[in-house]
Amino acid sequence: MHSSFILLANPNGDACLPNPCENGGACESSGDGFTCTCEPGWMGETCDAPDYCFGDPCKNGGTCTNGDNGFTCTCAPGWLGDTCESPDFCFGDPCKNGGTCTNGDNGFTCTCAPGWLGDTCETPDFCFGDPCKNGGTCTNGDNGFTCTCAPGWLGDTCENMPSNPCAPNPCLNGGSCTPQGDGFTCECSPGWAGDNCETNPNGDACLPNPCENGGVCESSGDGFTCTCEPGWMGEKCETPDHCFSDPCKNGGSCENGDDGLTCICTPGWLGETCETIEHVNPCVLNPCENGRTCESSGNGFTCTCEPGWMGETCDTPDFCNGDSCKNGGTCTNGDNGFTCTCAPGWLGDTCETPDSCFGDPCENGGTCTNGDNGFTCTCAPGWLGNTCETSDFCNGDSCKNGGTCTNGDNGFTCTCAPGWLGDTCESEITISKNPCENGGTCTNGDNGFTCTCAPGWMGETCKST
Image (cartoon, rainbow, N blue to C red):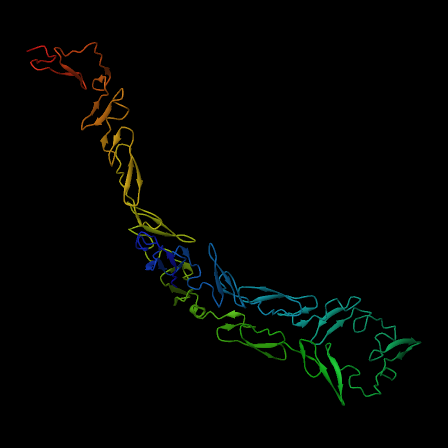
């Protein structure tokens, strides 16, 4: 993906000189500004920000969002993980009846709520709560439980001793039993009659309730209709519905059988509930990210990455792609970008700027400072010149008493202030009277005086005719 932005230009000329687009971005002048076309993996006004979402790192329909130091994936339903790479086997709440689902490497595990059991907690645990009393042993069955009573006990839940004629209760259909000597008397529930409450004189097909496992009975003409509880099926709700809760994963179809269910798996999946990926060809799942090419190799695979990506599965941005470091610089990948180690004579984030100070051009202890068009030397005391190559003989106020110092090739010359003389103007001229005789005029010089003689006179002090 290429990104373009327009910025106002430098008023001095071409907005693309120097190139403001970083990390290999191409600059194009546009009116009073410029446009940056960024290299893949970069974004921002001047291509200065990594595009962590380049290459669609979020798999299986996940949505990528750029952040300050990386990206975040919002996964599509049924997937999880940093890059949405892992199936969420718990998607769709496969654990029924309040069971808790835990994801595993190849499927899920259900921790069932009390009173339920089975791979997906689909089967009632009729023995929950220890219904068999007085030491009886409970065994789960298809439609309920069976108690094996301890010696001396009997009844559906081992609740009665044999000496009681009402144990087990001989009164059917909810009738209550009262012992009478060696026998009993039944008080029948409404709608029932007979010694054992076995007769339904009103002909109500729902008396007794023919619907098993909590099914609700509704009379219909001479018959009845059962509305079954979840997990049961059949005319009288007598058959477990093993396919209740869609136990077949990953698009598999469920078929009820006498002893359980059978899952017909879609291609690429296997296992009792289609929970296991069929690892025939490791490239079937396309482990190479960002649209790259996968090639099988023995029991493994090899990914051929596109420019801008690296790693075993092409999942890591290659920030050094595209010669990011200029002028012979060496690029090193980091977590969030790259670092350039510049060749001698270059500097800058991408080694784009000449190092005019390379080679220490400032001599004799001078300090070098890089500038836009070259370097500047700040010379040590006693030196001058563009590269501090020339001795500054005038350093340190060599000329005294207001004298002016002038550098020469091999030393300095002092121009003394009036009234002073000597190489460094150290001597004061003291004249008590005009040394020029016979009307001559005296003029002070750097190292003495000069006489301008009147007509007819000559000599240093105008003594001679």
